[in-house]
Amino acid sequence: MGREPGHVPSLRRSNRRCGLGAAPSNLEVGFGGLAAEAAGNRFYADGPNNRIVRFDTGGAWTVFAGSGTQGSTDGKETAATPNNPTDLAIDARGNIFFVDRSNALVRRAAPNGLVVTLAYLGRFESPDSTAIAVDSQDNVYVAGFSPSIRVGVDGSVTNIPDTTTDFITSMTADSSGNIYLGTRGLGAQIIKVLL
Image 1 (cartoon, rainbow, N blue to C red):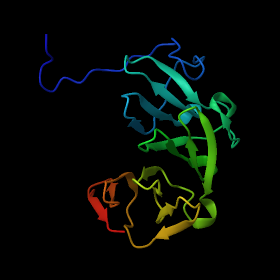
Image 2: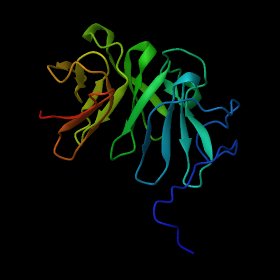
Image 3: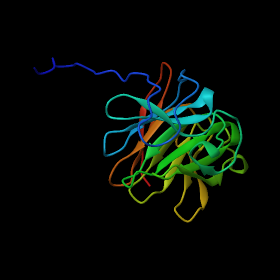
Image 4: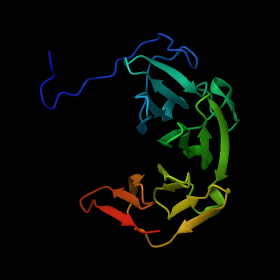
């Protein structure tokens, strides 16, 4: 029997392992960004619990990266210690890029769960970045209160000037490399950034 138009299936909470990552001991999931990879698994930036959570296609979830402990250590799966990851984006190869907000870092989690730090944002005047996007060339873009920032595949970090003075809550990239920023409030808008 087919679903009614507009039906949105929910993801359920479960402590069942789904093959990757640790079975969660903390069954509460906080708030943060959400992204899906090609196979249909969803990854969630669980900021308050300092971890990345993976929902499989059946809706069961496990901890993909992070142990719940605040820190800035790189490592595989629960050996990594993010500190308030707020948003994430996934490239075509399944790499997860996320904003580690309280550390002012951009980090990458490979499909096997290995987390590495790509860039420190504090010295680039953007420690409050909360949104992230990745383009088809794996350049990473982050934004928040401060100017938007580009982290190149070579590790270079540059400001993108004059995007907006509003707080950026979300962003995405299209196949042509254009970046779109979403702002909040009464004057909320979507801004296309031509690069």
